[in-house]
Length: 444
Image 1 (cartoon, rainbow, N blue to C red):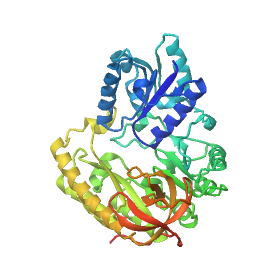
Image 2: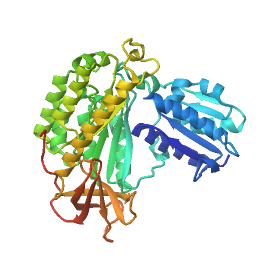
Image 3: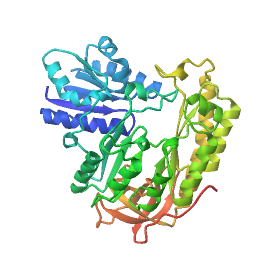
Image 4: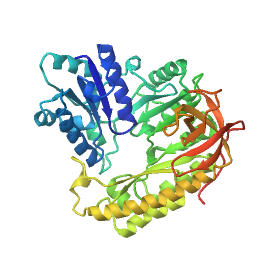
């Protein structure tokens, strides 16, 4: 076995897991293939948060088996944890199965395959290894850092506590050490990762996420700090103060609310109300008025009536998020909501999802239009996907910005860009100079 190819589905946690897997494969002596058809080993790093990706992965295994020279397949991630040995039974091409808690053992799994064995490594250890030196990072501008793994919330729709285990926080000094290392390599931004990141609690000192965020933001050479995903019930006043007082902390916050109806929130076991969520948003905007908010919404949760769905639309209209990630409810194994009797039919889910997207596209466009004519600092990631003569980067509020190359800037630079055009999902501008601050705009 000489070469590998990795395909990744899912969230930033999965993307970062793939970086760890790739680093280990390189340490083992394998080289990256340009395509799955050229690889001896294809890793499918999987997500099972929604039903469709599971079907997609099963279909992908079938497609790989039909290649002229079928590769060995390694299934990693949440589907691996969920399905376990069933994946070996389903396909003789699957050489190993590694859950999220076992991806540090990918070298062991490869060795087993080379000996003619098939491995299934799932479950979670009391302590997990975080050897950041073995991570292969593809970005030269941003680095992801795991802060807390797993989740203790047990929302009735969510499979994460079953596929990624219970919450396990890293020691604060270890996280800061990794961030210092990234900053020393020239990376300008770090993204701290956790399924419920603001539930972080240092196992050695008891420090909370506000403490960790303060320490990370103080690392020399670092320009920006982002983090995902926050849970509304863990967002305390100290954390809001850190956002307000530290200019390195991104003016972007992803804060899922899932439903605008208290009755549905209760059935979801979210443990906050619509009124409490709105109060949190008011408190945030009082001290960080230029914050760009994004959120997650589930449409068609069991028992969602038209009236309850309208509560969700009303909340979106009132808060006016910059980005909204919305999904039709999909029953997941082991979750209580999969057993609820009052399921919403698929046609109703899709119709409501269409209406929600129409509203959020309109709001995002209106918010972005307010940025036209403003100068904002942009961290350059690389060439624009649409035009190699343009750069693509992100503002301090995480909005995507494209602008023409001037020849005196490069990847990793932070430059001022004056916004000239705006769409629902990105901005277009031109290189300039200015104070680089975002305008203040709120609910209407």
